[in-house]
Image 1: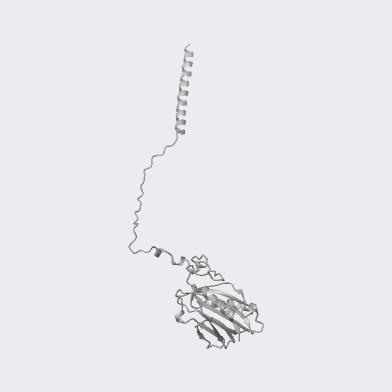
Image 2: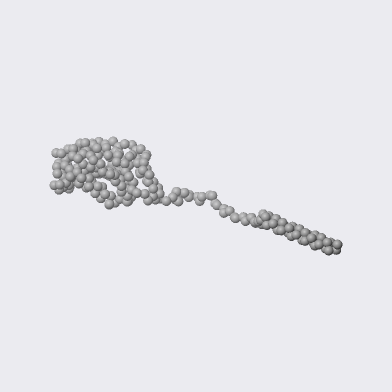
Length: 261
């Protein structure tokens, strides 16, 4: 009897111990699964800098701009997008007018005779004539008519050529002439491609150019070449850039009235 009672007591003791261990494991499990709560962080206020929004008296905001990024107004007139560091500005072969229309020039024409060249033509009356050189006849706009700090010039010349000289040589020489014109006195220089056009009824080529002198003066012009009487004939018209359209009409009048004596 006593033995049975002892066994019962032992069983109850073991049961109590097992029950206690189970509660401890459950509590530890709940502690493990509980979400970790971070400690609230202290707010740190960063001082905001104060700006003075008032500009000094006489301050020019444009002084902060990069001069190299300014688009040339004459190039913009031709519908060309120009940026600092861009490639040379392409010129429209027909030479677009300026964005601010200027009153068209009215020219009075007169006949000129270049005896040494054996040529006659009509051009703007009253121009100064220089025929001191054997194969060059030059007209220069008089000082009283100069516009935009540049006197227009018109030059006709003959140059000797070799026996096998042909139309392809004309184009090559025209290209070289256009390039060489921009090598002196100009800070920027751009030319068009060359195009075919007759001169004195002979097959030839012409090309246009645009240059900016070191003082900022804009110059435009056209050079036209053709083989006439076994010589290379060159017609060159140079003018102030903003009046290019007007002087190209002078070029057309010279070309249309040019004759051999």
